[in-house]
Length: 212
Ligand SMILES: C[S@@+](CC[C@H](N)C(=O)[O-])C[C@H]1O[C@@H](n2cnc3c(N)ncnc32)[C@H](O)[C@@H]1O
Image 1 (tube, rainbow, N blue to C red):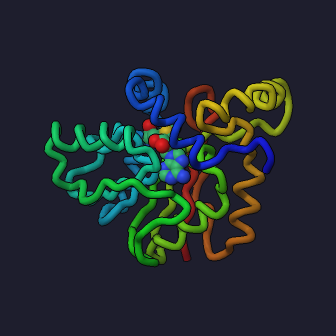
Image 2: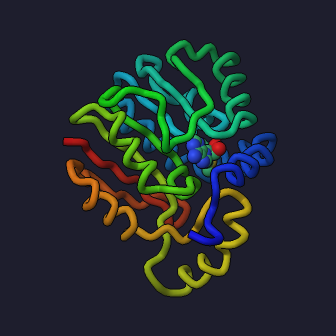
Image 3: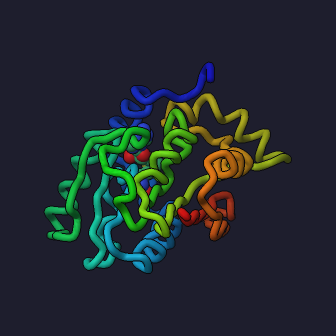
């Protein structure tokens, strides 16, 4: 899509965010992060945390949950590595630079895939979601937390006006629920288990899909 975000631009944007990311987005996104971690720990086993960023989530998973974290931004991942060392997170098995759309993992490999504030930051959300489902075991869960764009009203107008700046900052703010619903219908073999409003102001959602 013309004027849409691209992979190199996103990697560059998060390279710039890395030194201040925790300060700016640590607290504001924490409630969504914690809720996805509770869901992932309920499943346990081996979890893929895609777009793990600076690894803010890593310290909060149960130490019995094995974690693989991937991200497109090396500077963000460097922070995640530091966090793993500082907190001696022996349950973190892998941290790797990887594109969320081309995951270097076998089919049916993970008990859950977690993506916190990521699907609106990738250039091709549908193909990326396809790869999340590919690496999930049957019965496994895809657990997302993300901003979902307004369907109408002043918030939609604001989101459309803010979109060009947001793309330069590394995400698209106008991502509507319909896009996710259409993806799920086209993909098939998955069931929406939950859509839960999340702060700030319920503009975010925790979304869980179960793979058949
Ligand atoms: C808004 S941050 C969220 C970071 C972390 N999950 C959190 O809760 O704070 C989005 C993350 O997705 C990563 N990302 C964006 N596009 C990606 C892609 N195509 N593949 C892998 N990671 C990507 C960015 O580098 C960034 O670390």
